[in-house]
Image 1 (tube, rainbow, N blue to C red):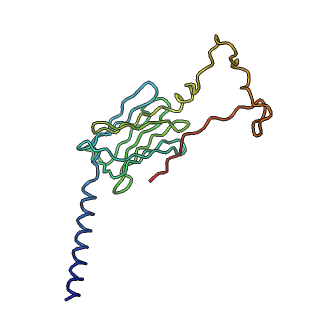
Image 2: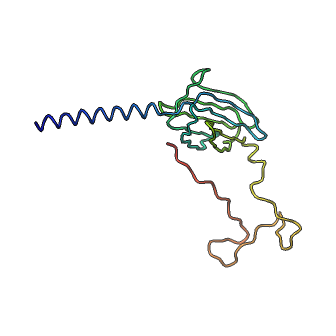
Length: 186
């Protein structure tokens, strides 16, 4: 009798695992439309999701490309299995949206000479990747210029002040800017 109960619990456990895995597959987000909108410094890649879902998005720069992987998603476009637009904006050579594997979609924005910069936002069933071309990112200053009218300001052509006598701070050299925190791909 104990064998019969043990066998029944194994079958029940297998059935439960199968139902959970089917529910997980059915719960993936569907991307139903891709639109490109040209902006002043680049493009917006707008992805429409079915039912307003908000999947996780991971971005990374690799070579001359900005890559956004959207996990737990399926590409269900009416126009085919993917999206490709060449030369959508200055500094951007192509934008592609493809099914990476059975559970992930990849958005790849390739820059003409360097990786573009981008920011992801999600709202009302839309995943928006705001991308600036590499040329526009290099042209805009990253630090504000000093106020020339204020007293004791450093002139633009002079090196920043150093900390005399402080170990590890060479005189007359500036500290390089910090990089944003890296995000690991899935």
